[in-house]
Image (cartoon, rainbow, N blue to C red; front, side):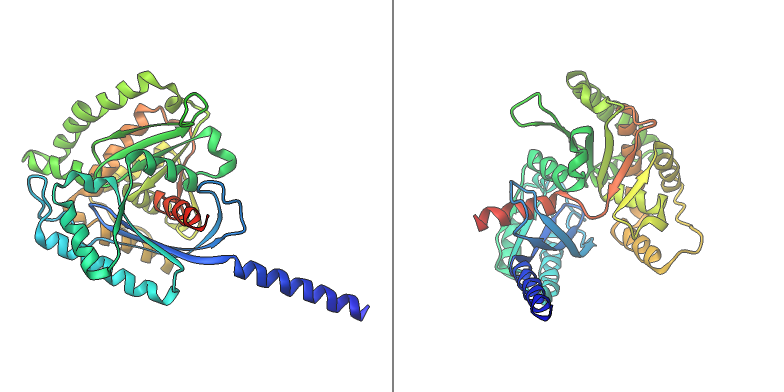
Length: 350
């Protein structure tokens, strides 16, 4: 019996050692026109490495708003915005040192494609960090977001709505084309919409409604004429991006410590109305919830009115895709940056 016990212990230790040997800490920094996101994950390289699918655990995340686009004019980032963005990346890399990642990547989102001097930002980041910035297309963003934000068993009957700072993307898995998924992009995101509404110089709410009704809804309706899957009442709606993060956090603050926040269209509309009225008050909350809500308002300062714009955009899209009665889910541990990180790391391993 003693020999069998020893044998079992040896087997257990060998399995543990093998598991540790195939676990790696990897990290990514996502550059957006609005802010910078950092994600560190513990990935199991023994898991299914088909494409971007792998087992992983999120062990560190932070969102910051260094004001990269503040002061931008006529499609050009300001020199101060470039410096703030590059220094923010350098500071995040210092924090990442304690995790000693086996693989790291810095990726610029498509929202930075709007700025003609984006190479100047890349150059400054390279000077401060010694790391080249990689790029991603809108199609890749929505693809990787779907792979990491939607539970695999629900992929075939779900869709994803990603509201970024510079644009908005929608997509879902499909068997009807060679790519195996449908997607399209709207050239408005939270920061871009807010900026344009402010520039009109009229009542802010009126300006937002005009832009949404005259420039955004027609684009959505045109896309929906060609592809019916977005209105499918059986498709669950996963949301991600800065505005969905804020809406989910303020709608269900007690769920902040959970990986998934489940919302309804009514929840979203109620929170959008609060953002429109600059109502940030909430009853006494646990510390973890207070910290997250404080972080939301660090990234989206109320005086910029961006959450008003982003939530109005979210409501309009939900109305156009007939979201009434459909589950709306925010995945706090998802995001295209994790999908991209996994795919690029596994590719390098092969």
